Length: 427
Ligand code: NAD
Image 1 (cartoon, rainbow, N blue to C red):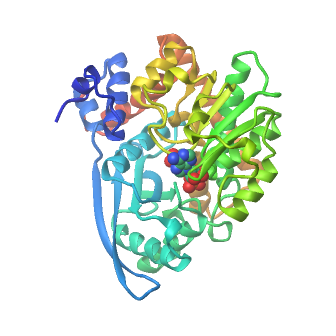
Image 2 (cartoon, protein in one colour):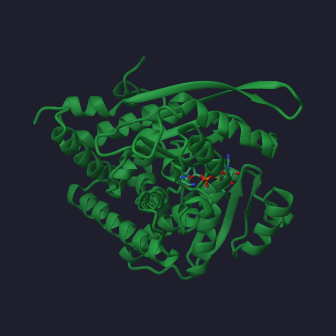
């Protein structure tokens, strides 16, 4: 297998998220002059579990599903990160996502390392009962390695609070006691946190607000294009519209819409909820939904999946700010092109860290068994995101590097210190 350096030097663009995150680590570690042993520890997850489990389907047949849980690094605390249900989930993707979680927790100074899980399935083709049995089956399969002080899952692509509720219930039954702290993003009634559902988008919007302030501009009438219309993308659209932005384009797996004068968000949402597809007026249809990434807008928010901005389309990005609500939407080569073109990329490990931050608040509330108001949660989230934005911004200025490299440097420094303190590596 080619090394990351060989791949970077070759003509092949790195698209495997596991190799991408490894190259991002190498890049920031080189600037910091980190010792090789630290880099080698961080380039691989500490533990990966592959499971397969049988599920009774509605038609009476039994199907075997496969899933993964990756725990990257627990030097600073238990591992933490979402579980996605998607037909294309791979082990490498889950490993990469767990690594991004470690660095994300570091940027916002949470006492966690990174974890991630995935089940290969297509929820669009499954009934509610089948999804419940898959959720419970997966939790049963990984129960030995998760727990409030070991590894704490959360929602991700195509998973939601109800699924977290089922998983928490299964874990609590196995342990014979109520264990809300095993998972976050739960329904409020069983220990969820107020503000968790909106937290990823809200955190992303806080970083955009700081970036806009930093550039001496205003959000009033700023134009925004958003790829992905789920938890992160849809709520970001609402929050930015409330700040005076014009949401001109949105897309999801079914298609895309663009109106340079601004979309009527309420109409778009109503139609999406009733028909399941993003359409309300053929005049506004994007012929190719990927065109959304190249529109002449002020702010672009990728809020769907990985590797959507590559070296093939990076030079066509016209937005001045790209706020990565999604994990891993930009390849390393695309990153370089965007940086050279003066596009400010607010990297995933900062831009979408609001989700894990309020997940941390949820876990803290579960452990205390004492719950905060939504205003308190949002204020605490705002403090974390604003502080983290400026920490990244000043390091980027000091080292004359892009925000992603600066964000990695902040995390790497913390991890190196923790690993030294625990005696995993020499001083
Ligand atoms: P979600 O399942 O709620 O929404 C995903 C959206 O992406 C859906 O609207 C789907 O239709 C759309 N999508 C899928 N394929 C697409 C394509 N090819 N083109 C355009 N849109 C497409 O998931 P989510 O929780 O909003 O997660 C979105 C991204 O945000 C993921 O990268 C996830 O890892 C990241 N993220 C989510 C959270 C969270 O708390 N939910 C936290 C941090 C990061």
